[in-house]
Amino acid sequence: MPPLHVVTGALGYTGRAVAERLLDRGVRVRTLTNSPNRPNPFGDRLDIKPLAFDDPDALARSLDGAEILYNTYWVRFNHRLFTFDQAVANTRALFAAARRARVRRIVHVSILHADKADDLAYYNGKHALEDALGDTGLPHAIVRPAVLFGRGDILVNNISWILRHLPVFGVFGDGLYRLRPIHVDDMAELMIDCAARDDDITIDAVGPEAFTYRQLVNTIARIIGIRRPVISVPPAAGYIVSRLLNPIVKDVVITREEIEGLMRSLLDSDAPATGTTRLTDWARNNHAILGRRYASEVARRTNRDTAYENL
Image (tube, rainbow, N blue to C red):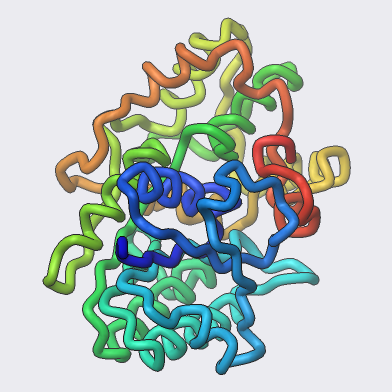
């Protein structure tokens, strides 16, 4: 019988890319999800179980027989319906269940420089979970992406949406801080490669292209054929503008912490590229649809019956 691999969020974004590749390799795949009614592109090839964080016994049973656990579960910001503290507690429960179920190895998604910004709640939570994973004693890989792009992404799509809808695009400060985006499919391949290893590793997940934030915006604008002034704005002013957009898009466009992390170049790394897909190539291939629909993080967390790419 093929091995069983468990993926959190296989009906979502990164988890879907992982599940797709595993199924193509003939692996049995089970997903743990909070959205069992979301459209399932895999049919009966995918076994679906709940992310029963409040039931440790059920959570452990859902991992019985699993060789690998790929954990993509997290939240992007604090919200009245979900918080970093809850996400940390839930992930600790998942790690404990994996230990009880004797999962052979965990591949866990963190963030670049998770241990370098404990003053930012997002990074503090990711750092705490890296430590918690080490404390389980289970063999593991920690994969640290910066920015993901690809089918159903948020950042590149929503930069495109703003370029299409606003008369100017404001970058925070000088816009010269850097980032290394990686395609979600390359991220999935890296996670699967890490699952096949035996050593405990932490690896940066970065693509072959590096941009300053200003360069990224200008590159996307050129590719989608939109001419907009790209201007420097004080971070506080840019944040205020984003807050004005929030009720229009019914989402949180960007948080203060995301601005701070971006401007510290926490989304940059000098590590060798672990992905091969160039953002510029992907954007050219998808220029006609980029930014046509705003991608809402809140909608993805609250509308559990619709595919990510339609939210």
